[in-house]
Length: 400
Image (cartoon, rainbow, N blue to C red; front, side, top):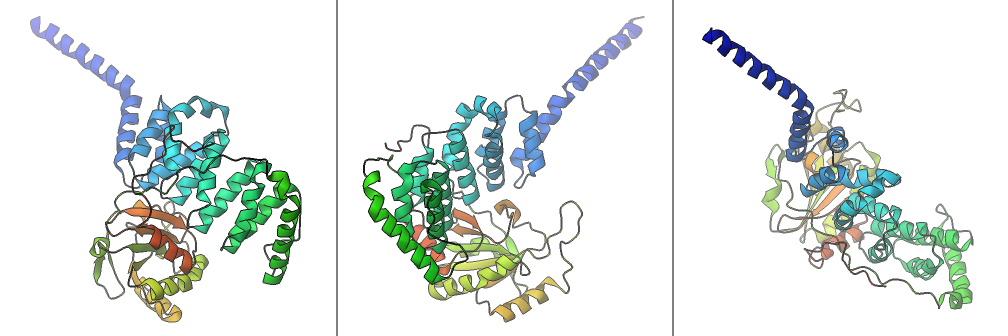
């Protein structure tokens, strides 16, 4: 009789435990997924989205992803905020997420910066305009270009003197953007076209300058907030890796510590990557004693869903790259990353993607696309002049 009662007790306890585990299963699964995502170097977008969407506190989940300090989660957080900022429901978590946005807009990754600036705009935050004004002084013309777009979207006629000033920018794309912004704000058009030749562009710029001489008194009464105390913020230690070069020698990124490194991920068959080669060659020839150019080929990466290569590439990667080096007379070192393991923590996305790493092994700037040799040189010079501990907060004074 006693044994029967004991067995019954064990059975009831077992059933209660099983029931409790069954009821807690979704919560346990959520915690397990969150733990994996927070500790994975390159978590997938779908997994991170599930963690946020399933969390009872989305702001807390986003803050935890941001706090990892890694590129991939941080890009996701700002991208998620940008996508959701157009919905009124985002307003409920904005007070909690504003400090993240203000830190993100200083983060050295250009994509993260721009997404955060878009969020500040969408939330009509008073820091948006001062930060965009400060970005106009950045060494990267694409940062200046995006800042002009941000100021243009404000549709504020007080910005006209700013756009006029940017007509003198040394980068043609920035000058063209300034002209486009002026046309939007003033409803004037002096025939400036992106595909125009140098003479036509010079003539249009001359007309804008003449227009400004005739109208600048109308804008003398306007005042703008002072630019924010904004600088790009370091992105943490560069993830180390070991990859073979074209001769089969193993090369570690950390081997170059003590000297700035321009790390470039590229595919030899991709048009933008091919267009980048002359710029990298010129920079290498001019500043090769001051910095290392290290290019990592990811030609053989496979589609994550199908497991197939995107293109029918023939021959071994080594043979193709040796031909690439010969055809383009590449003077800098090339490594091979067939499986994308080195690329992953740097969040490749579109190619080419480049990361500036300072002599201490700290990532200082990340950007996609082609940059001129002069811009790369300006970026190198900025590594020693940019503050290493700048963080915008909700209490940061932006002036005005």
